[in-house]
Figure (cartoon, rainbow, N blue to C red):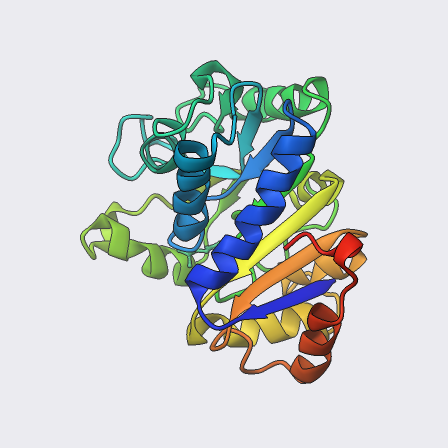
Length: 262
Ligand code: PGA
Protein backbone atom coordinates (compact mmCIF):
# COMPACT_ATOMS: atom_id res chain seq x y z
CA UNK A 1 0.00 0.00 0.00
CA UNK A 2 1.08 3.54 -0.66
CA UNK A 3 0.25 5.96 2.14
CA UNK A 4 -0.10 9.64 1.22
CA UNK A 5 -0.40 12.00 4.17
CA UNK A 6 -1.48 15.57 3.43
CA UNK A 7 -2.00 18.52 5.73
CA UNK A 8 -5.78 18.45 5.30
CA UNK A 9 -8.61 16.74 3.45
CA UNK A 10 -8.62 19.29 0.65
CA UNK A 11 -4.96 18.69 -0.21
CA UNK A 12 -5.44 14.90 0.06
CA UNK A 13 -8.50 15.08 -2.19
CA UNK A 14 -6.63 17.15 -4.78
CA UNK A 15 -3.87 14.54 -4.81
CA UNK A 16 -6.45 11.76 -5.25
CA UNK A 17 -8.13 13.74 -8.04
CA UNK A 18 -4.80 13.90 -9.88
CA UNK A 19 -4.69 10.11 -9.92
CA UNK A 20 -8.25 9.90 -11.26
CA UNK A 21 -7.61 12.64 -13.84
CA UNK A 22 -4.43 11.03 -15.05
CA UNK A 23 -6.28 7.75 -15.64
CA UNK A 24 -9.15 9.47 -17.48
CA UNK A 25 -6.70 11.38 -19.70
CA UNK A 26 -4.72 8.22 -20.51
CA UNK A 27 -7.81 6.03 -20.91
CA UNK A 28 -10.82 8.20 -21.89
CA UNK A 29 -13.20 5.22 -21.61
CA UNK A 30 -12.00 4.32 -18.12
CA UNK A 31 -14.32 2.50 -15.74
CA UNK A 32 -14.46 4.19 -12.32
CA UNK A 33 -15.82 2.71 -9.11
CA UNK A 34 -17.28 5.44 -6.93
CA UNK A 35 -18.23 5.95 -3.30
CA UNK A 36 -20.65 8.15 -1.36
CA UNK A 37 -20.56 9.69 2.12
CA UNK A 38 -18.91 12.87 3.36
CA UNK A 39 -15.38 11.77 2.53
CA UNK A 40 -15.35 11.83 -1.30
CA UNK A 41 -17.12 15.20 -1.60
CA UNK A 42 -13.91 17.23 -1.89
CA UNK A 43 -12.59 14.77 -4.48
CA UNK A 44 -15.76 15.16 -6.53
CA UNK A 45 -15.60 18.95 -6.25
CA UNK A 46 -12.04 18.86 -7.55
CA UNK A 47 -13.04 16.58 -10.45
CA UNK A 48 -15.84 19.01 -11.32
CA UNK A 49 -13.31 21.87 -11.24
CA UNK A 50 -10.94 19.92 -13.49
CA UNK A 51 -13.81 19.33 -15.91
CA UNK A 52 -14.96 22.95 -15.93
CA UNK A 53 -11.59 24.68 -15.91
CA UNK A 54 -9.25 22.19 -17.55
CA UNK A 55 -11.60 20.30 -19.85
CA UNK A 56 -11.30 16.91 -18.15
CA UNK A 57 -13.58 14.84 -20.35
CA UNK A 58 -15.92 12.23 -18.86
CA UNK A 59 -17.97 11.66 -22.03
CA UNK A 60 -16.69 8.11 -22.48
CA UNK A 61 -16.28 7.21 -18.81
CA UNK A 62 -18.40 4.50 -17.18
CA UNK A 63 -19.02 4.37 -13.43
CA UNK A 64 -20.22 1.83 -10.89
CA UNK A 65 -21.08 2.88 -7.36
CA UNK A 66 -20.29 0.75 -4.37
CA UNK A 67 -23.64 0.63 -2.68
CA UNK A 68 -27.21 1.80 -2.18
CA UNK A 69 -29.81 1.61 0.58
CA UNK A 70 -32.53 -0.99 0.11
CA UNK A 71 -35.97 0.58 -0.07
CA UNK A 72 -35.00 4.13 -1.07
CA UNK A 73 -36.21 5.27 -4.50
CA UNK A 74 -33.56 6.98 -6.64
CA UNK A 75 -35.13 10.41 -6.13
CA UNK A 76 -35.08 10.09 -2.31
CA UNK A 77 -32.95 12.84 -0.76
CA UNK A 78 -30.66 10.26 0.87
CA UNK A 79 -30.43 7.74 -1.95
CA UNK A 80 -26.92 7.29 -3.22
CA UNK A 81 -28.17 7.65 -6.80
CA UNK A 82 -29.36 11.14 -5.98
CA UNK A 83 -26.16 11.92 -4.07
CA UNK A 84 -24.09 10.97 -7.12
CA UNK A 85 -26.28 12.86 -9.58
CA UNK A 86 -26.06 16.05 -7.53
CA UNK A 87 -22.47 15.86 -6.34
CA UNK A 88 -20.74 14.61 -9.47
CA UNK A 89 -22.71 13.39 -12.47
CA UNK A 90 -24.83 16.45 -13.30
CA UNK A 91 -21.97 18.98 -13.13
CA UNK A 92 -19.71 16.95 -15.46
CA UNK A 93 -20.25 15.68 -19.00
CA UNK A 94 -20.74 12.02 -18.18
CA UNK A 95 -23.57 10.21 -19.97
CA UNK A 96 -26.16 9.27 -17.34
CA UNK A 97 -26.68 5.90 -19.05
CA UNK A 98 -23.02 5.12 -18.34
CA UNK A 99 -23.49 5.61 -14.59
CA UNK A 100 -24.53 2.65 -12.44
CA UNK A 101 -25.73 2.55 -8.84
CA UNK A 102 -27.21 -0.63 -7.32
CA UNK A 103 -31.01 -0.65 -7.48
CA UNK A 104 -32.37 -0.23 -3.97
CA UNK A 105 -35.88 -1.01 -5.18
CA UNK A 106 -35.07 -4.22 -7.06
CA UNK A 107 -37.89 -6.76 -6.72
CA UNK A 108 -35.42 -9.63 -7.07
CA UNK A 109 -32.35 -8.50 -5.15
CA UNK A 110 -30.11 -11.54 -5.82
CA UNK A 111 -30.81 -11.31 -9.58
CA UNK A 112 -30.19 -7.57 -9.54
CA UNK A 113 -26.87 -8.08 -7.70
CA UNK A 114 -25.77 -10.76 -10.19
CA UNK A 115 -26.68 -8.41 -13.06
CA UNK A 116 -24.58 -5.65 -11.44
CA UNK A 117 -21.55 -7.95 -11.29
CA UNK A 118 -22.14 -8.96 -14.90
CA UNK A 119 -22.39 -5.32 -16.00
CA UNK A 120 -18.99 -4.62 -14.40
CA UNK A 121 -17.46 -7.55 -16.27
CA UNK A 122 -19.06 -6.45 -19.56
CA UNK A 123 -17.69 -2.93 -19.09
CA UNK A 124 -14.20 -4.43 -18.90
CA UNK A 125 -13.78 -4.37 -15.12
CA UNK A 126 -13.16 -1.41 -12.83
CA UNK A 127 -9.92 0.46 -13.53
CA UNK A 128 -9.96 2.57 -10.39
CA UNK A 129 -12.15 2.21 -7.33
CA UNK A 130 -12.66 5.11 -4.91
CA UNK A 131 -13.22 4.02 -1.31
CA UNK A 132 -14.04 5.66 1.99
CA UNK A 133 -13.68 3.76 5.24
CA UNK A 134 -16.12 3.44 8.12
CA UNK A 135 -14.88 4.02 11.65
CA UNK A 136 -15.50 0.26 12.02
CA UNK A 137 -13.30 -0.44 8.99
CA UNK A 138 -16.07 -1.14 6.50
CA UNK A 139 -15.50 -0.56 2.78
CA UNK A 140 -18.60 -0.03 0.71
CA UNK A 141 -21.10 -1.44 3.18
CA UNK A 142 -19.03 -4.55 3.82
CA UNK A 143 -19.35 -4.51 7.56
CA UNK A 144 -16.93 -6.29 9.93
CA UNK A 145 -16.78 -10.07 9.33
CA UNK A 146 -17.86 -9.71 5.68
CA UNK A 147 -16.29 -12.44 3.60
CA UNK A 148 -13.21 -11.42 1.66
CA UNK A 149 -14.67 -13.49 -1.21
CA UNK A 150 -18.02 -11.66 -1.20
CA UNK A 151 -19.63 -10.25 -4.34
CA UNK A 152 -22.45 -7.71 -4.75
CA UNK A 153 -25.24 -8.69 -2.36
CA UNK A 154 -27.63 -7.52 0.33
CA UNK A 155 -26.09 -6.69 3.71
CA UNK A 156 -27.43 -5.62 7.08
CA UNK A 157 -25.78 -2.48 8.43
CA UNK A 158 -24.29 -2.51 11.91
CA UNK A 159 -25.99 -0.43 14.59
CA UNK A 160 -22.85 1.77 14.55
CA UNK A 161 -23.28 2.52 10.85
CA UNK A 162 -27.00 3.21 11.25
CA UNK A 163 -26.21 5.63 14.09
CA UNK A 164 -23.34 7.26 12.13
CA UNK A 165 -25.50 7.81 9.04
CA UNK A 166 -28.48 9.16 10.99
CA UNK A 167 -26.91 12.62 10.58
CA UNK A 168 -28.01 12.51 6.94
CA UNK A 169 -31.59 11.65 7.99
CA UNK A 170 -32.10 14.71 10.21
CA UNK A 171 -30.54 12.77 13.09
CA UNK A 172 -33.45 10.32 13.12
CA UNK A 173 -32.04 6.78 13.34
CA UNK A 174 -35.47 5.28 12.72
CA UNK A 175 -35.35 6.67 9.17
CA UNK A 176 -32.06 4.97 8.25
CA UNK A 177 -32.61 1.76 6.25
CA UNK A 178 -31.05 -1.30 7.89
CA UNK A 179 -30.33 -3.05 4.62
CA UNK A 180 -28.22 -2.13 1.68
CA UNK A 181 -26.87 -3.58 -1.53
CA UNK A 182 -23.10 -3.38 -1.69
CA UNK A 183 -20.34 -4.54 -3.96
CA UNK A 184 -18.52 -7.35 -2.21
CA UNK A 185 -14.96 -7.31 -1.00
CA UNK A 186 -14.13 -9.69 -3.84
CA UNK A 187 -15.62 -7.16 -6.27
CA UNK A 188 -13.52 -4.35 -4.78
CA UNK A 189 -10.37 -6.46 -4.88
CA UNK A 190 -10.92 -7.07 -8.61
CA UNK A 191 -10.49 -3.35 -9.36
CA UNK A 192 -7.12 -2.66 -10.99
CA UNK A 193 -6.42 0.15 -8.57
CA UNK A 194 -8.02 1.12 -5.26
CA UNK A 195 -7.75 4.58 -3.76
CA UNK A 196 -9.01 5.03 -0.23
CA UNK A 197 -9.64 8.40 1.41
CA UNK A 198 -9.95 8.90 5.16
CA UNK A 199 -10.17 12.19 7.03
CA UNK A 200 -10.62 13.12 10.66
CA UNK A 201 -9.68 11.76 14.07
CA UNK A 202 -12.63 9.35 14.17
CA UNK A 203 -11.04 7.39 11.32
CA UNK A 204 -7.55 7.19 12.88
CA UNK A 205 -7.99 3.81 14.60
CA UNK A 206 -9.52 2.16 11.53
CA UNK A 207 -6.80 3.63 9.29
CA UNK A 208 -4.02 2.32 11.55
CA UNK A 209 -5.63 -1.13 11.80
CA UNK A 210 -6.15 -1.24 8.03
CA UNK A 211 -2.58 -0.32 7.12
CA UNK A 212 -0.51 -1.70 9.98
CA UNK A 213 -2.73 -4.29 11.64
CA UNK A 214 -3.34 -7.91 10.72
CA UNK A 215 -5.46 -8.71 7.66
CA UNK A 216 -8.72 -9.80 9.19
CA UNK A 217 -12.41 -9.82 8.27
CA UNK A 218 -13.17 -7.95 11.49
CA UNK A 219 -11.41 -4.96 9.83
CA UNK A 220 -12.64 -5.31 6.23
CA UNK A 221 -10.44 -2.57 4.73
CA UNK A 222 -7.32 -4.47 5.86
CA UNK A 223 -7.83 -6.73 2.84
CA UNK A 224 -6.26 -3.93 0.79
CA UNK A 225 -2.89 -5.14 2.11
CA UNK A 226 -3.36 -7.91 -0.46
CA UNK A 227 -4.15 -5.52 -3.32
CA UNK A 228 -1.28 -4.87 -5.73
CA UNK A 229 -2.20 -1.20 -6.31
CA UNK A 230 -3.81 0.42 -3.31
CA UNK A 231 -3.23 4.04 -2.29
CA UNK A 232 -4.52 5.56 0.94
CA UNK A 233 -4.95 9.34 1.13
CA UNK A 234 -5.21 10.65 4.68
CA UNK A 235 -5.13 13.98 6.47
CA UNK A 236 -2.96 14.58 9.53
CA UNK A 237 -5.64 13.61 12.04
CA UNK A 238 -6.61 10.36 10.29
CA UNK A 239 -2.90 9.43 10.17
CA UNK A 240 -2.34 10.12 13.87
CA UNK A 241 -2.35 6.47 15.02
CA UNK A 242 0.01 5.16 12.33
CA UNK A 243 3.44 4.06 13.54
CA UNK A 244 5.43 4.52 10.35
CA UNK A 245 4.34 8.02 9.31
CA UNK A 246 7.94 9.20 8.93
CA UNK A 247 8.59 6.36 6.52
CA UNK A 248 5.43 7.05 4.48
CA UNK A 249 6.42 10.71 4.13
CA UNK A 250 9.98 9.73 3.23
CA UNK A 251 8.70 7.41 0.47
CA UNK A 252 6.26 9.99 -0.93
CA UNK A 253 8.74 12.88 -0.88
CA UNK A 254 11.48 10.77 -2.44
CA UNK A 255 9.51 9.40 -5.36
CA UNK A 256 11.14 9.77 -8.74
CA UNK A 257 9.17 12.05 -11.06
CA UNK A 258 8.31 9.26 -13.47
CA UNK A 259 6.62 7.35 -10.67
CA UNK A 260 4.73 10.28 -9.20
CA UNK A 261 1.01 10.39 -10.00
CA UNK A 262 -0.44 12.04 -6.92
P1 PGA B 1 -18.13 8.94 5.56
O1 PGA B 1 -18.44 7.39 5.34
O2 PGA B 1 -17.35 9.36 4.36
O3 PGA B 1 -19.48 9.60 5.58
O4 PGA B 1 -17.39 9.03 6.83
C1 PGA B 1 -17.40 6.56 4.94
C2 PGA B 1 -17.91 5.15 4.88
O5 PGA B 1 -18.83 4.80 5.64
O6 PGA B 1 -17.40 4.38 4.07
